[in-house]
Image 1: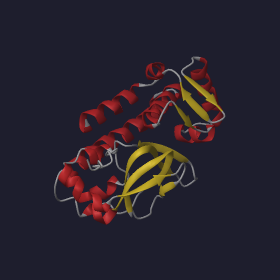
Image 2 (image 1 turned 45 degrees about the horizontal axis):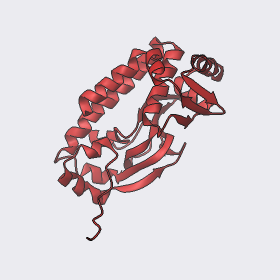
Image 3 (image 1 turned 45 degrees about the vertical axis):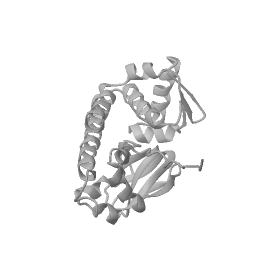
Image 4 (image 1 turned 90 degrees about the horizontal axis):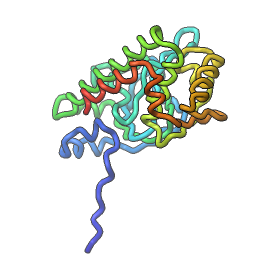
Amino acid sequence: MPNQSRPPPIRNQLLAALPGEEYGRLLPHLESVPLPFMEVLYEGGQPIRHVYFPGDGLISLLIVMDDETVREIGVIGNEGMLGVAVALGVKTTTTRALIQLPGSAMRMKAGALRGELERGALPNVLRRYSHALFTQVAQSAACVSSHAVDERLSRWLLMTHDHAPGDVFEMKHEFLATMLGVTRSVVTRAAGRLQKEEMIRYVRGRITVLDRAGLEAASCECYRGIRAEYDRLLG
């Protein structure tokens, strides 16, 4: 019998939610690209030329203040799309987009996406995702002012673990401190406490999740709230 090759699986959840005919219409506009560790995809104030549908990996959304202070406001993995502002009629970005975990994505020109926003299921899918992302950003902002650093670190590790290919991922103290908005020494102490409780192992910039259930118990309610909203809106 002749070999019948199957199309590759759709790893991005937004693209997977589209009817087959609609995804087929988008396919000529999509190209597979790598997401190299720590590469900047967007810089604040620049035009959005492409949108990205991650298949794996994780992208951090960062706000850069006038004094060069950097704060993370959200993350995007295979449940979403980088560049959702395009679906809202916005042509520039206010955030820096940095690859936190390496992976790959399907990339599409912003103009091509605009041409698809008046038909099919894609507009509704992106509206639901936009609300889920807004919920994440709002919850993360509240978390910074309301919860202890150990709870916030646990939440952040859980969200990263959700998108990692396994239980081990690279993460430097300096990067963790930036993401959480604290000093390096504060992160060192907080990570040390989680390590003492045998929830994680942290050696030379490499984190191993040992006790996922323990991290969930140690995290603030923000992690559960964000996950519940994504599940409700995007299934």
